[in-house]
Image 1: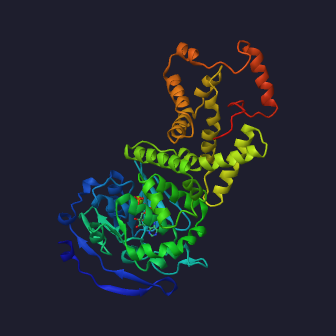
Image 2: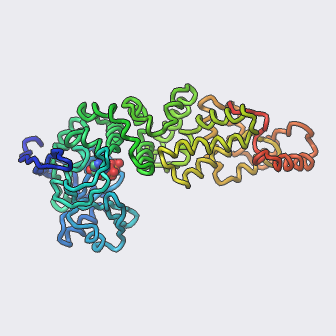
Image 3: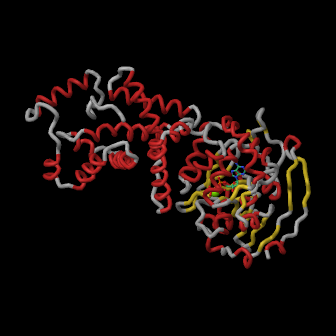
Length: 458
Ligand code: ATP
Ligand code: MG
């Protein structure tokens, strides 16, 4: 049916570095074939197109939103493509900001939505590094050229709310029907231009239940080293998208299958090869996927804290064997792991702070005497730390009894809590004397006084 509507003339033109790029004429697909009503768009997505069109520009919803609507899914966000320049876009809206260096885009804020608006991009004059990675390309072009620059055929669909048609430049609608993720142009060239596309292929396939077309899948294994050239901050963003896609477990499995995980989380291969580490990460990712599906917020700090925890445990153990004291050994292990990880994947300072807080609170769950459990409950990050403890328990790292005690303690009234407290190991009764002793121990380098110093990580 849709195929009948497709009439296209293909012109081949020279792209950057002599690569041949396909610039095609679009198939126009009407409302009755694709079934997307303009009312299905978000208010912001539709409004941005309307305002740009009222100002005499062309404007379309493009990319993931059209793809997701065709799949009858709720789009995560809306992207708009236009022939207006970023400056012209900015002038059309009260709340708009030009961002980005590599690709200039405009963020338009409508109510509580941020719409990403990009100007049609041309194919020429992009600046590349020695590996062929595109460093900058802000040359504007036609809509057909813009379509050819996009990564997958299913992402090169343009929806016009004014007449409810889709412009399909690369058989994207047909590919979507066949559940195929197909690269536009030569996959090897496209991966070289931007190695992030390899990660996008894995993420989109896992998230949308598509099969990566063999031609797009084949080069990934041998080109996986190119991931190393991606700036650490961009890699972090992409990794976060992957982990919060609602299909993180599937994504990580596929990353491993494609040999892509090495450059991303250098520690992940090690973790996944230890049975207990694998179980822990799996449980954490399953929980994350569940939360995404229930529309609950995801804390990146919690996520990375789980992914790296078993590496921290291993490093902590090493530091203890070198004779370091328990808490300083943990703190050093945390820094060592984060530093190693950040060389590849720039975890932002704020998130690194969150990660450390969750880790730091873990030994404190072992103290069930005196005021310490109450002090722990008062910590702002207590809930995250408690959820983390539950994962450690479920993976077999920690005794179930400890988690049960904390669950009961949290739910109990003050009097019951008092009755639940475990007596301090020795010298029960003389609390003041004991607290004095503890304070003096802390001053000697015992850290935050948390946890029983004799107990090593397991
Ligand atoms: P989602 O938003 O659901 O994660 P998406 O495909 O919309 O998926 P975005 O990052 O929002 O992903 O990008 C919007 C569009 O921009 C894509 O659909 C694609 O057309 C284009 N695009 C994004 N990243 C690239 C890239 N690395 N190379 C080529 N085109 C890209
Ligand atoms: Mg998008």
